[in-house]
Length: 265
Image (cartoon, rainbow, N blue to C red; front, side, top):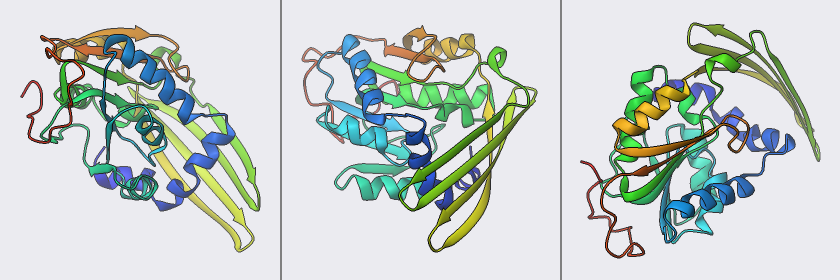
């Protein structure tokens, strides 16, 4: 997703009510981060550094910071990134596109959660993103990606609805989804009421429905062995990959040296 499209879908109005809406659904970023950390440490017990790609407002990243010595984020939407920066003083949140970023260093773990990768428009773009993320792993490092629905699980014409009341704020959200080939187009109408008044806005989000085989091939071709969980954190599934290559002799050695080149480059 180009920066202009990411900003259109995740602009200031959306960023303002994003967490409130999904928290009302029961989303628990802290619990999800703990689950992902458990999976990472199952493969790399002494993992100390983590990069969260498409980190949004930094809700997962905030929780990861409690479990890792060093964390960083990457986010394309300016409005979401600014909220993450304010939330996490001292944590670097990079402005970058997941399809082609180079931070000049490698991490013990890289995550890309809550369906963010589905905003990419093609299989080639998804593969480029997986390659870029895998390229920021040390040998033996762990890559965790949460997809969106695969094509066979899409419901044509699905209507979603949320009504949230939080103190003196009310948020109403209604979405309608239609399919065009491999893309799901979600038209979302928002109404936000506060004592100062009521305002409405619209977001249009487009998700690409990648298959499990396409994800597995992207991981394998990027140098990672991969496991696929059908349920995952939110029902969408989860891909957990481990970068091939000889692990460092001292697995627990600090992996945050900014002079270290990206693995696989």
